Image 1 (spheres, one colour):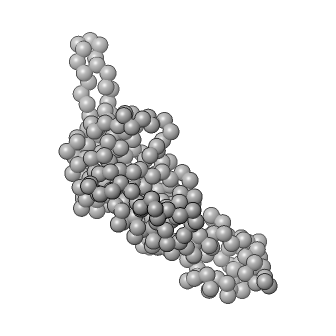
Image 2 (tube, one colour):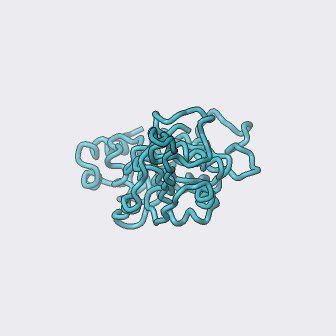
Image 3 (cartoon, one colour):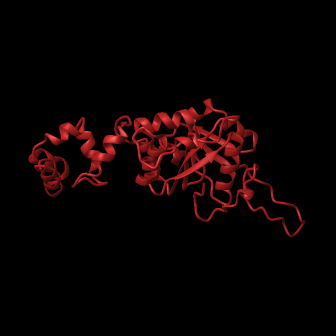
Length: 259
């Protein structure tokens, strides 16, 4: 659950009251407590279909609704959160959309998290413990989640039993941190060319294990071919145009090696 290392880890320190953004100490002159400023949070407009924004408002948060291209909730200039219900988590892991969302969050923010929010009165578990397997399976929700974290070791997961618990998590993450800037949050990712592309995670994982393929060229490769079969049929010259001579040579030799 921990996002920044400097935040308190004890669950007992999570409170439902929004964090103070001003000086919380009492004034020495008259002994009067400084006025508490509302905690600001930038929220994606599409999130207002869920219960969480209303819950945050009721707990004293000041919400700034905008259309966000990166994340669902910007808590501080460095912290962004993508909220997922269980059904949305399953769908976005299967399509590869969550992979793209995680990559974008870590591109623009120092600390990024995926909030997995369960429904109230539902079991606080992704799967039945008896269904856990020691093997990685492309059809397993747990395996897909593990692969996501392997690809993005800086990404954090937040687990929430219900929206009210999420409010407590947000309050803890904002405590003592500067407020986010609404215009800056709305502008991030807005200049990207074209609509967000969604890729199948299983072939993508296989692609990234091939010789000559690395973090700086795998997306260009995915944009240049439809599937792995098409990639395997490319000539050395075609591969060179996509990924450079040295990397193309490694990949071409591997794909055309006699078994």
